[in-house]
Structure formats: structure tokens, C-alpha cells
Image (cartoon, rainbow, N blue to C red; front, side, top):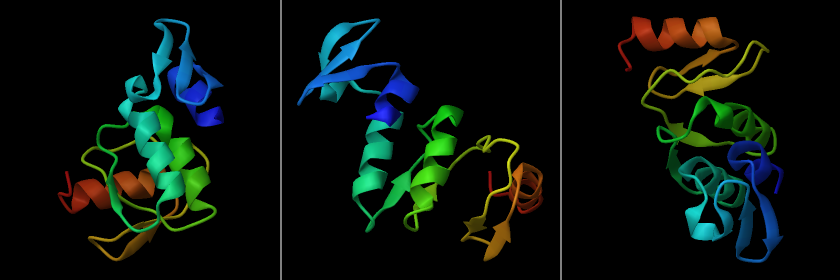
Length: 113
């Protein structure tokens, strides 16, 4: 539920009902694409997730979820994963990067976006 509050600035009121400061009580279907993608990533380990519709505010959650399990995402832009070190494998290249600069260089130098 922290993800919902952090990304959408909303709270779970009861099962199936979200309290949004902007919209009032809304059904879970009205959550942002980012939150819905994060929830799926957290529950499902079998699929590749299209993270291109997620904003940079989801990046820390990708890293947090991936501490517990491997995630495979498709990302069509250079997401900002912050200034802290991390470990991301770029499957297209078979290369592991450890920070934003390495990620940007690998993606841009290999024309991945």
C-alpha cells in the first residue's frame, strides 16, 4: 500500500476502494498505470513488464521489488534511477551497469532508445 500512497498520493480505504485527494473515493481501476504495473511486478514473476508508461517516480520501486526477485522490464526511455548505486542487467547487451551514468552510456552508445 506504500506504493499507492507514494506514486498516486492515495490510500486504500477498503478492499477495492481508493481514497484520492484529487478524485475522492475511486475504484482500483482508476489507479495510475505506474501503480498497476508495480502491483503486477510485485505479484508476478513470469512476465516481462512494459515499464515505459511508468514515470521516474516508479524507479525506486523497481529497485526495491528487484531486491526480492528478478524483474524483467521493457523500458523505452532512459529512466532516472537516482544517484545511489544499483545493479541492472541490460539483457539486450548482456551487460550489468551500476549507476545512472553507466546506464545512460550503455543505452545511448548502443542506440537502445
